[in-house]
Amino acid sequence: MNMAVVGMIAGMALGFAGYFGGFGAFLLVAALGAVGFVVGRFIEGDLELGDFFRTRDDRRR
Image 1 (cartoon, helix red, strand yellow):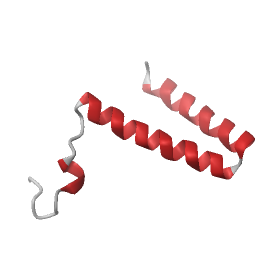
Image 2: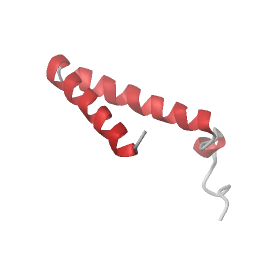
Image 3: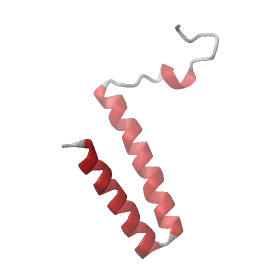
């Protein structure tokens, strides 16, 4: 699926949540969408758990 279409669907979902559920629902949908995005990147292998816990001095150049 094209990334523009995925972005459009996500924007529409956030819009519906904000309109029908208020600002709290908007924030909940946005937060769960971000968590789903990160989990999806882990499953695809694009991210590793060490990327979040590595110190500044430990980063590769």
